[in-house]
Length: 250
Image 1 (cartoon, rainbow, N blue to C red):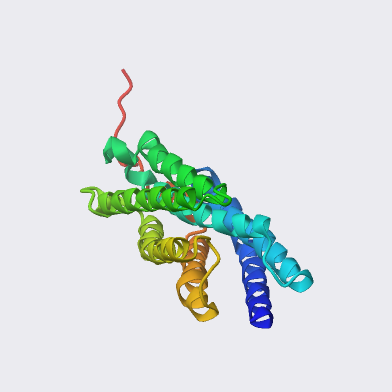
Image 2: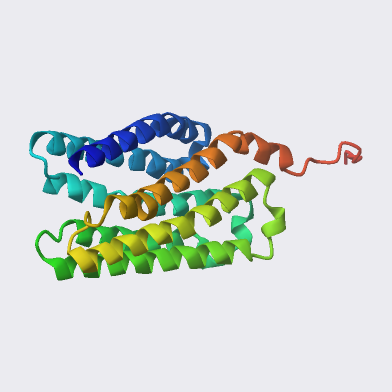
């Protein structure tokens, strides 16, 4: 089991090491309106590299995962969901003035606080298993709020006025959030069953824990690379003054 687990940690290190490169590129290419979402994508890569690196080292030396490594791995769920909020905000930029206040900066702050509070509580629970369970439930509540914001964005009357690349970003988030939901349900089941965030069989961990995260990252990064010229496209889509308009000097 230890050999298989070590191989799994190496596979994750390789995946996130590769993913970090396009994540940095997306952070640079998407400029000010997309900085927040792509920063979280890169932070996700960083946390997984550090956490899985520590887990691999602990398994190689003691044969058991270390507590700090498990905590860092648990925190990794947070930027995965917060990235969805950041990318959603970028996808709403062209129609922001016509959206309800709940989809504005203040509205998006609420799920930020809920998500970070829940995952922070779970990660710092230590031996207090009830605190772990409460933290994950709060985190799941944050997921439901994000899901509601995505549905509200997709059903907005001004949806058709988004530029094409913004629609692609919204689609990426719509694909990612259900997968994040699967990952959260898995974390909650493991927490209630094993009273930690790293229990369960290797096969179940791969299918319900690691694979959804990989697919979410692929969805994010694919959309980020495809829409790398979004800022330029927004400028080109702006209404231009009519060159045939006659001006009269008075």
